[in-house]
Length: 295
Image 1 (cartoon, rainbow, N blue to C red):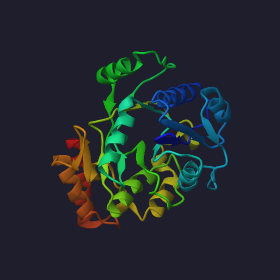
Image 2: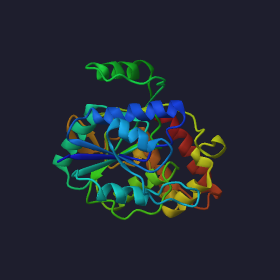
Image 3: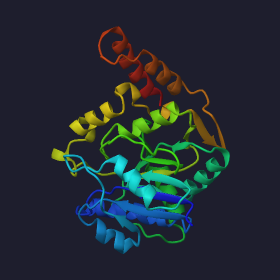
C-alpha cells in the first residue's frame, strides 16, 4: 500500500513548454518509488493522454466554479476518496521533487500525528524534457545551486499532511492566490504544527509564463483571487511560510528559531488593518517592505 499520495490539478498540456515541465514534474514524483502514488485531477486538454503515457491515475470529474476553474474542495475530496496513502500531498504540477520529499514526510510523521509540511521552492529555468538516469538527482541539485533562485516565502507550492485532516475546505479556485495562504492559517488555528521544511527538502519550480490565465494576467489580479481571499476570511488570514510554527532541521521537528524576517512578519500581522487605511495600514506597508528586504 502506498505511504504517500501526491495529487495535482495540471494546466492543459497543449502548450509545448507547459507540457514539458508538467511531464518532468510528474516523472520526478514517480521516481520516488512504490511508496508513492500519483493522481492527476481534472479534464484539461491533453491530461487523459498524459496520464496514460505516464502511467498515473486520472480523475476527470472535478467540480468547477463559473469560470471553469477546479475547486480545491473537490480536488481534496476526490484525492481522498481515490487513494490509500496514510499521508497526502498536494503539489503544483510544475514542481520537481527529489527523494528528500518522501524522507521528510516520513520523519515528520514519526514525530507528530497531525501536521502540515510547507516549504519555499527554488525557481529554475527548464526548457527540455528531463532524462531520469541514475545521476539525474545530482545533476538537478547542481543546476539549482548554480542557477536556481530561492522564491519568496509568500506562496506555497506543496502541502504534505495526514489524510485525516483538511476534510472541510472552502470552495477555493485552484491556481489562484489565497487558498494556499489559508492552508497555513487553518493549520495554525487548529493547533497543528505547520512545519517549514525549506532547509530539508528541495522543491524545484520550473519557470513559466501566465499565458494560461485570462489575458495572461498573473493570478493576483483576478476576481477569483479576491473571492479566494473572502472565502478564507479576509486578507488578515492570508498567512505565509514565515508564519510557520515549526521547522524541520537535522531530522527533527522543532519550534521555529528567531529570524529577523519572522519577527517583522509577526509585527506586520499584529498591526494589520482590515480596512487598509490610516496609520496602522501605513505601518503595515512599511513593515512589509522591511520584511521583504530581510528575507
